[in-house]
Amino acid sequence: MKTILITGGTRGIGEGLAKHYLANGDKVVIISRSKGTLPHAIYLQADLSLASENYRVAEIINTKHGKIDGLILCSVDQAYRKNPLMTKEGFEVTFALQYLSRYILSHQITLNNNAFILNIATPGMNGTVNFKNLQCLKKFSSLKANVNGNRLNDLLGASFTDSDITYVLYNPMSVRTAGARSVFSNPFMKIVLKLWHLVNGKDVDTVVNNIIRILKETPTNQFTAYKTLNKVNLAMSTFNLTQAKKTSARNK
Image (cartoon, rainbow, N blue to C red; front, side, top):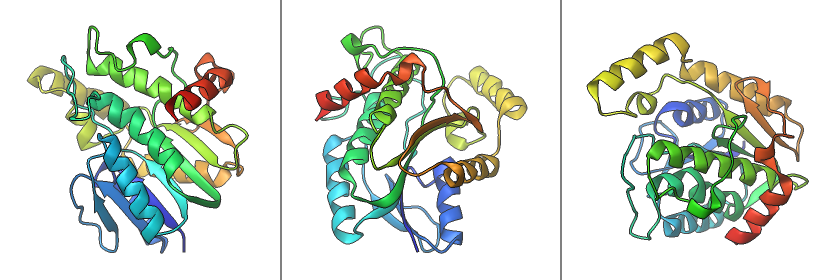
């Protein structure tokens, strides 16, 4: 029996993966704001937009559950905002959830040998990190902040190159989830987004099956990135190893 830790596991891809591992007889611990309803899952409530909460739950996991076999990072705030939403610690929520939480947990959770980290983000997209405006507070939009956070995740994943961890960055592209449908509050944009997902989106079960297939096929102790079922070229500038190591050192 493996122990799998999932952030954002009360809906969408996170919940779908939780169901898979529970059906497989594994122990599944879910970190989320609210307690979910999956039988036999262990829920740990926390606000992962707060750095202090990430450190708190990491200590709880390491103490109560020991070494983890799989860390799955799904927690994200997809709501569109024209203005920054700051946490009480002074971080913008998009940056805090999309990158900072993932960085902390990737480094603080104690993993077993041959364990994996799965980071649901958007590898394979062009762009560079704006280090001078890291949280995109100047001329803010949550879309720009999300993109910057995902490019930071590219560097986070790349920093695990040549480590003893199997680190997989995964881009599911369009997925039909409640979170994806609630990005915009504008009624017209809601309709447009719904139509887009009907035409281009994949259902959660398909995405989960794709992810499980990739995890089975990925060699241990390697960093890889995928866009759906296609490998992403790690020679892309977004995975610059020198920059990744510098970013990792800067965050310690």
